[in-house]
Image (spheres, rainbow, N blue to C red):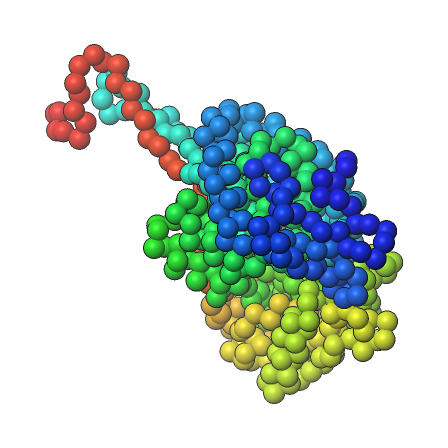
Length: 506
């Protein structure tokens, strides 16, 4: 495939990428750009991207609005066929996409491949919805009368995505929006605009009609706010911080928009005295330090029975010492960089808070290796002796910091796990099936794992959380289409006479 916005050149002059509006790659009206940098080496400029303005965003919204009637009228199975082609293209370009993601976002290459695969999986799943998208056909209470319900698209969907899953999450949102007949205005994180551009290039190649998918890079203030406040964007899907999500909900609520929010997490792993501690160690390390702790499902709390707490902490520390930091394309690297210098500063602030709340077991510093000096690296960090309500046990850090919270028994573990304003993912390690089922019932989280870490959700089940993790909508799974469709109930009376429903005809 030939890149419509240009490959990264061999010279030292970075490519300038464009917006995608109404089926064409265009410059922003203001002519302003920003750079995307490799978080493993900030000297590596990936490209320059349009700093989209409110005017650019308005044009994208208009393009999506213009394309909507035709796209809505396209039979859903035909919409699904285009989505199948897109999934096939992603599969064909998987390695190229994954390597570009590692360079721009920082996650190690194996994880980047998994990120792309999630996009492929949800594209295939939602393509199939083009031939399902079930409504209900039910008996009428009156004779010679037909009763049924159908789903219909809402209109222009504003898609606002984060940087940590720069291909999977846009696909989680755009695929159900598009297969149900909505058009899209897509604003990616300014930390990963290249990943978004590569994704939209493939969507255009797959055959999505002009105006169906529109990409506007730029700031949340200029682009995101314009999408949220526009009267012509009736549905918003956002993944990001709880603070930003609350602001979006407040502003969108003034126009009674449909809003789907996937927000913060403070996920916990419960380890009981009967657990397989080696298995628990594997699950915790992967959940805490995979993606450098930059997942909304990352494990940041381990709630462990005191009888095995010291043993578990030692196992975790011994294993964490062996984790290799570095550029995710280099062989043997386990942990990549944080996304930007601000993230390094934030993690550092929380480490200082943790020093006053518990015992620092390992880590606690930005990586000092000279080879990593130009990257945003922070060493895997573990604190022990943390109390359930301590700040590092309650607040989302979004980095490689793990708090170990000792408790007396399972009941205390449930209390500690649930004493947080978030409720995305939780897990338990135990050999007792009765206890496992109690946990499945009593954990206040949208996702629960037994004898596994807190990460690893699959695309064919609903993804989302309770409390301040979101507002009740779900991504992935068949439930994803709920966000982007309205129900319509239809009655057909073929009796040839007026029949009055909701009248006592007895």
